[in-house]
Image (tube, rainbow, N blue to C red):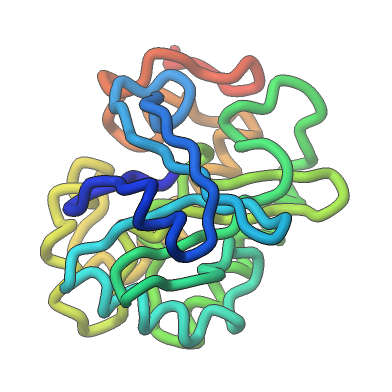
Length: 217
């Protein structure tokens, strides 16, 4: 989910912009030991999640929003308040990491993820965090990727801020191909060729795996 950071959540502030909000502290995804403050915002029948960015990150996300129609299968930023507070649409379906029955065929994963990564490459963007807990699946609407917190544009110094994240996931500089590698790891995980504890090199942060995912042997 979207993590609040840098600014305190202010329900009155969001209400002044027409949003009705609810907040809760919860694990970022099932099995994660990392807790996040998740804020759900509702307006005109639409539901989204609230993300508050630092000034530096806000410039990145504003740029990202300006070209987001080029992305295939990504949750959209639907509103921006004062260039700092971003409302991100709620993706349909269930997180891939939380699915227990009805998992699609691996080839459908590969096709959807390849199309998504290819659309980012066209605009020089790297998502940087393609994991089963950042991909939603809906049987009718297909796949939707969320969470752009580790994304960067080619040639952007922003990438160095996340170097620890990439290196912990066994990626090497210049990190331009992490999306392709992560997409392949998802497919291998679905196929049962690798265990979920091995896929991204941080098993101590994960205490649960879905029944479809192989554990480390």
